[in-house]
Length: 225
Image (cartoon, rainbow, N blue to C red; front, side):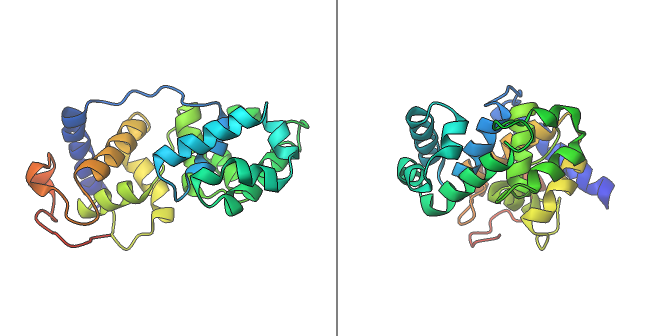
């Protein structure tokens, strides 16, 4: 069953690479920046994430000053991104937690950890779950850790790569293993892109789908997880 799921995923990867192009990893932000950016992105559209991140980095000179600022000031600064009342104290708490070792907000210790240890460390931080931890490792450090958002989960489930009943939080490890270290970044990026452009939650554009010949859900117009 695992072999079949891996074959399906790799077949989908080849087709998506042909359709969208093969993504090549380059670091997006340093690890601390990536962590804050990902927290800001939680339940938020990309455009608002970028606006709130840019507002935060323009208003404060460094992450230590964010950590030491009143939570109300942080909340006001990121208000345009949504859920600021949740994200402001979360960011402040995370920056405090990663300052404990050196006195400054720092994630340099991740370099000396293997992938499992790095994920576990990040997931112990306040408000950091599997997806946020995987985003930091993959986007900032190029580690093979698959972030599973709603698009990745939906497309993988529709293709039968994972059981639709498997929660997104539990799918990070299996999808990382199925993709293989050399493919995690490309698979993640193109599954997200495919979910946004074609494989919508409602009314997927099946007629133009490059995965149409291998998808069990072709033609389904209702919401499908």
